[in-house]
Image 1 (cartoon, rainbow, N blue to C red):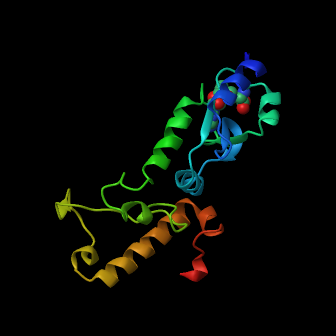
Image 2 (image 1 turned 60 degrees about the vertical axis):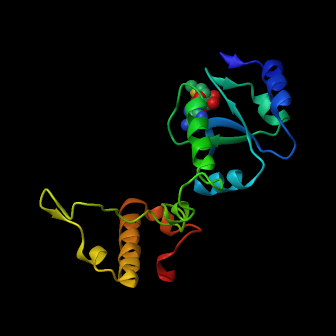
Length: 172
Ligand SMILES: C[S@@+](CC[C@H](N)C(=O)[O-])C[C@H]1O[C@@H](n2cnc3c(N)ncnc32)[C@H](O)[C@@H]1O
């Protein structure tokens, strides 16, 4: 089953506004990422079209110049869960949503790296200790440790990020 073009287009035309990106959620689309979340959060909103079944008649995608965006390389039954994930990642970037304004700027992908590890009390848990440097009170040393750990994790898990637009190893 495929969404009929005249039915889908009527819904899209009722919802769309000229200055908002019109997005069709689709596994074929450009991969959603933090930089897209930032763009959308900084704009006046987006119109998201969630498919079901086989998807949307191709002529609507062309005629309405829809941007196809994917949540990842897997196939969902419908676009709703993907839309919810995208909306949440945008909403938490809006001013006043997070308790601490700086929280979002220190997270994974913000500077092209995955985030460093976090610890909290107790100091020792199941014989595992919090790294000494984090208890030292030396803010410079802590910042350096976090940077090193972020780099290590990114190299091990997502080396592709180091070659992209974000942080490059030789700049560190
Ligand atoms: C069963 S899927 C259709 C898959 C499509 N026939 C294909 O092979 O590319 C139904 C709908 O779920 C949504 N969907 C599925 N996977 C998605 C993903 N990875 N990202 C965003 N939306 C997805 C899309 O809106 C799609 O139209």
